[in-house]
Length: 367
Ligand code: NAP
Ligand code: ZN
Image 1: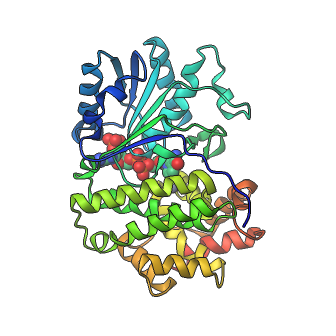
Image 2 (image 1 turned 135 degrees about the vertical axis):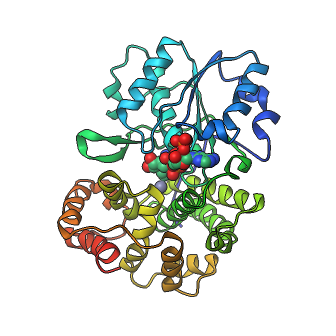
Image 3 (image 1 turned 180 degrees about the vertical axis):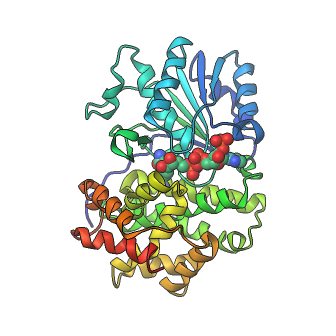
């Protein structure tokens, strides 16, 4: 067996009302919290109220930055940093989908040293960061247990993970926050979690532990396939989706994501295709690139699909028709993807520009 390492430093609390049940632990991270959220969902689903109640009970002050947009930009991170420094916040809490959780991680780096040039976020020198608490309200990204903070970089016309390793100190997982999530966001985020399980399981950096976590994630996800087809979600299904998403986060924290994520960034940046949906549209063609693979046979079996066509049919059913793209657009996205050799290197063999374009074309021109 190949040698490997495993580390996952985030303390995970799972279960209904876990924020209030563990209010003392949440309030112990500092004296004043910078709470990052999206526009409105954290207020509507009760997560923000649980957090502020927990903080108030421990005498901890807080300020809320509710301006994190989907696919958060570097500029948004800078605005949140400004508020955090002005208010002398000494820890951050991200509440929401991957967007507020990812923004919270980058902001945590920029609050640790008020004199730091924010561009240091993109340097290779590891930065300190203030304590981070993450509270997911979608079941998709697993950002609560990954070291990644993915930002939209307008200068580069794409999204990219900042080259820092930023793990949250604690994650509170309560599926009750997802009960009001509409079917479209539920499907898109669930497909994101599935793509993490698949890409991490097949990536060259997969190891024994990440495979164990991925296989547990596929089993949990299998129980959610019928509810996803029906668009009908009980609390138990929401919990299984959340478990598979967090397990998937633990997998990509070790093994990384691969081609659907790299190629999906182009669809999101230029056409606004939601992140998970973009990955799902590209997944069948990505899997076909492997040819015969015992690991693909195993993951299909764990998910309960007879073959790859059955998985592709499920994705097509829940995601419906892909958006319309031209050859010229796909060539442009291919050229941008070719500038990321690290991500291309997660595939087990070298890929040419025509392999990458072919993956786009099979998914979007000949689907
Ligand atoms: P998101 O962009 O965080 O949120 C999508 C939408 O869902 C927003 O409109 C949000 O509303 C709404 N929403 C969130 N929770 C809700 C709830 N409980 N009820 C109702 N609406 C809710 O979506 P996401 O798919 O979770 O995150 C995508 C981002 O995560 C992308 O930027 C992606 O690149 C990143 N990502 C990160 C990692 C990682 O490891 N760090 C992995 C994969 C993806 P509000 O704006 O009002 O909150
Ligand atoms: Zn993802």
